[in-house]
Length: 358
Image 1 (cartoon, rainbow, N blue to C red):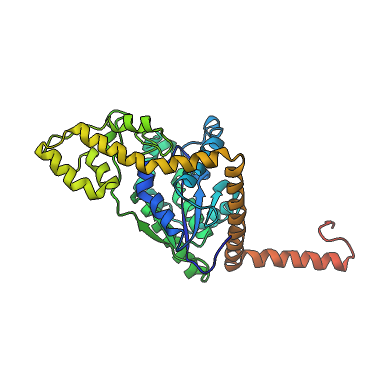
Image 2 (image 1 turned 45 degrees about the vertical axis):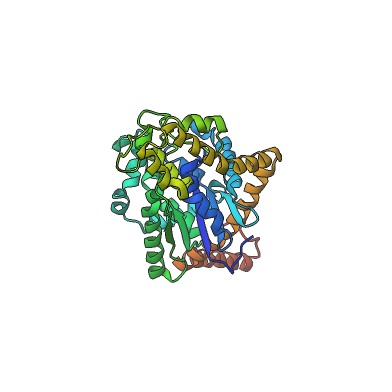
């Protein structure tokens, strides 16, 4: 159910793998908090996943991935009575809006976006293999944002540029055709990105990422979380910078992080003790998340019901927005004029409307 009294927010993720601790500290915790002050739309962006995962065998994985992602969202505290969780591909109006926004988007603007190149590299694509859908990824993302008339978009740093594309398109459209869209504002997490774990070679040297497979997932069992945390390298006492293990300490035990680092540098505690303290702290965070996840998973059909209900709400909002866009551009009046003329002809000839004829 929409609430016009609150400013609207849109956020979401691609269902390309389980949500993880990096998502939790990056955007998920703020999404939960913003439910009180904003009307929240949370997109399960399955169309976006096709930009790099379009093969048939990858698409057949989507139903399980979508369900897993909704469970992750519900488990962290996204409340379906306060947030609209919806499936992107279940909102056909976003296809139409994307095409119309493409007409306003210079190719040169898209080709300069570094994250598109990063996504192509992560997918192992050469320049000659990059599909149009990946190049136009920010336009589809803009359509998602503008379809909902979202005023606020919580994002990680790698998606901030995409929100700026949405802002540019909203301003361009409003100037060309009249005021239709709210101009969205990105909001960034103040928590630095978490490093990955060494489940892959050099995993802790890069940020935690689904595409790299160096994650601690929200759905991981306690033993698995402990195993992954113990793969992090031990810094030398007094080592400058932000060693991976202490980056986790800053995120999950910020009150203790500084003193813990000081004790370690002085040799008062060992590396294993720091690991043990972090394992306990992260398990304290994940325990209620696991409990909520298990509860929703056990309620047969509930996850699907939540997603269908949210998608129906999103479809209604999207069609309302698309109607305003078509009207502002003159497309709807043109079609209405054609229908009116055809109907008048049918009535004059005393023939049923739409029957056709010479």
